[in-house]
Length: 115
Image (cartoon, rainbow, N blue to C red):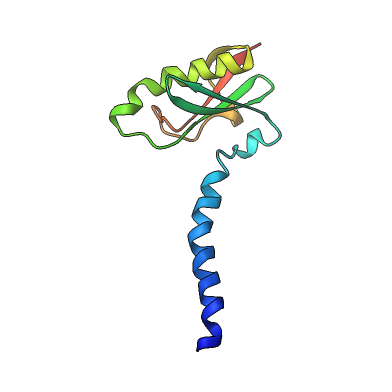
C-alpha cells in the first residue's frame, strides 16, 4: 500500500486543481458564437464577456452575484454590448441567434446590433 502513496497524493492534487482550472477558463460562447470576436469589460464593478459575431452580440456576466446584486445587470449588459462593439443594441436577438435563457436572466443575453 505504501508504494501507492505518491499516486494517491497526485490524484488528490488533480482533483483539487481541476475545479480551479475549469473556473479559469471563463466564459464560453454558445455554438452560434463560435469564432466571434471577444471583448472583456468591467462596468460598475461587474465583469462581462461580450462576443460579437456580425450584427449580433452575446453578453455573459462573469462571477457570482447575490439576488440583490443582479438588479442592475440587464441594463449593464446592454451598455457592455454597445461600448465594446461600437454598435447600438436594437433589442433581443431573434431566430437562431435567440437566447434560450429565461427572460430576465442576468447570466447571459443575446442582442441584435445596428452597426
